[in-house]
Image 1 (cartoon, rainbow, N blue to C red):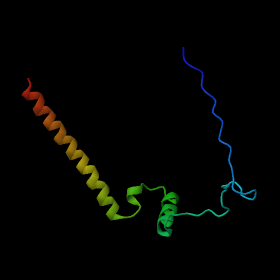
Image 2: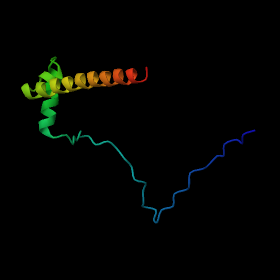
Image 3: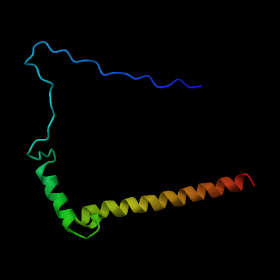
Image 4: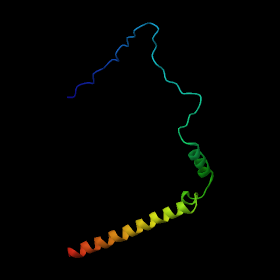
Length: 91
């Protein structure tokens, strides 16, 4: 039969003087962001627009998007071709 779980007590903190306090964490009242201002501006523009993301920044993003789609389609076709060739080899 399994043993019951042992209870472990937290160690007692010992400080060097009476004046020493436990460090506390609290949220600052300012919301500090590590995001660059340019990126923050782009996020606000993208959230305000209902257009697809690949159309928001113009032709360069559109070109990259369609290149990725074409590459995926070509890869799928090549994969299907080699799968068919492999099946023919084992018939």
